Image (cartoon, rainbow, N blue to C red):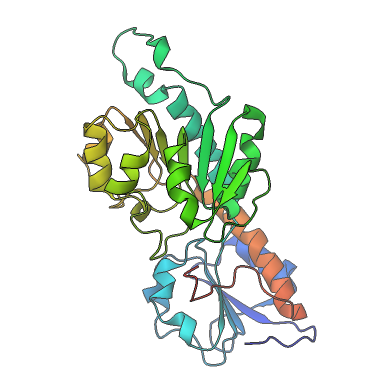
Length: 311
């Protein structure tokens, strides 16, 4: 679908709540805030449930902006087949999630969870490592992965970037495609999952790929919980594989009270807090402002979901 190249002043509805930051972004992008969806050219939605929009979107809608960086649940909602452009927040939250990923990496390397849980003074200094001269394999080089690679530069580690296409990733010492994943896992000291959830990445870390990794390797997931086969991971940990795991996302999510991950001595859990609400709203608002400006000027929108890619 093409958007008229002439400059226009679009009517944009913001929902399900008219958040102050997002309303200001719409207006700063040159659009008019619509009182309702009826007659709106575009809808900017900061809700997490696609079902809330079912049957509510108006005829003639040209553009729907969703708040998620991952588009998997929206792909199954049918909205991508209705003749309007759907944009996600891909790459928008990269900096804050990458910062959290770096925190989890350092926590694993320096055994922070082990020491924090200790009930007596037991230094275990030999267990503490360093990122210097370590290999960090970053799976996925979108907004999160590229931001993380930039943050890792001062630590003196070797960075291997894994992408679907194998394109050269700036800042990485080596870039490989999906066919190089096994080697990138086998040689890694730290593996960070930052890839989108697609049919190809679901269960990416499983019994087979876990067996490839060093027993001293560490695993960090800030992407989507279903990139890891949770049962396979627990089994691997109990068999002495891997030395530390840090998960900001899990499968299932939310993680039920009493789940084995919570009590496992090798596992550090943060409850999907890498992108806290205040930072998410601010980043999303900046994205909305730029997309409103582009929409009004007939320029390509950022974050257009491509059904064939799954994101």
